Image (cartoon, rainbow, N blue to C red; front, top):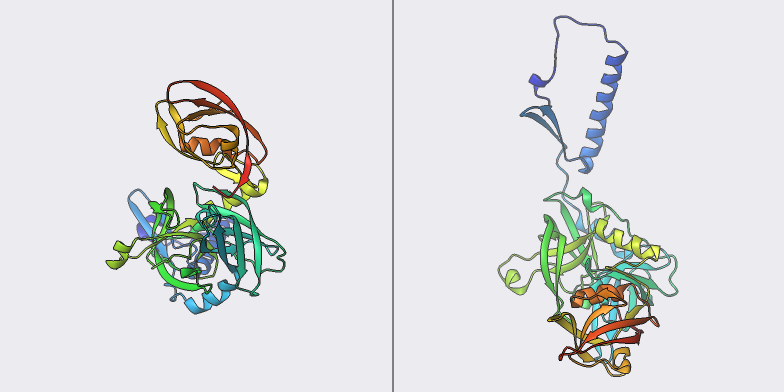
Length: 374
């Protein structure tokens, strides 16, 4: 509906419509037709016209309720279960994944495969299990890309756009809740498009700050991490990454959080390019084999543990030494050490600048080894 004060109407004196007028009328007709078509799909929920403080808003007709059973049946064959084991502790964990290519590229959460020595992926479409390797990951975005050995002809997920989401949109969270191997479908609605959270990993109790998350009013559960947040058309709009804690659940405020699919696919494209960055790691993970913590004086990464048989132990790093540089790149924290090693590969030799607790400085070459995803 238009506000009449914004449109010039002269019914008393009909006037001849020239070429410019016919062109304008044609454009208006096309626009109105597009509004009707797109309005039914909620792809163009509102358009605002006007001048000054006067506006007129066009709204599409209300959408029917999301058919959860129909959408889930369409999407489930495009999802997989991800099972991991961590040596030597014997810890095992489970998550979910989204099939991106017929030959077995699978999108999942980084924390699902973090530290994993063995990864097995079970396909919901054909019932087969595949060994998997990590092609790359971005720990800061909590995204990883896997490759399944021997896979072909897999049903591929339809990737949508998180930019099209609006508050209140109905969605489904689908994943391997509880690690049972059976998909769980959790309906809900979008409550925030840019949430910042601090997520705690239930496996190792580590914490990670995540920003720009899609928040949904849905009781997302453990095991759905790496699963799909899908819209009413079955298109993936997010990668499930976290759920609200027990206190919120007990109070009836259960929420789930997902990485926007636009963010996730940016990471995927970087991995596929084969070019690592400070945040995106590509290929096998190179490791020093140390546990470190932030040091203040001098700034750097303090060596707390050197793992037996690993590069740092073999090279002679000492507990208490502070790593202050890698190949001349200044290290000021554990995070900057990870960034510096992120672009390295197994068998690379790096030169570490070290400061002893008594202030002694030395430089030590270390040959990196292959390790699990950080």
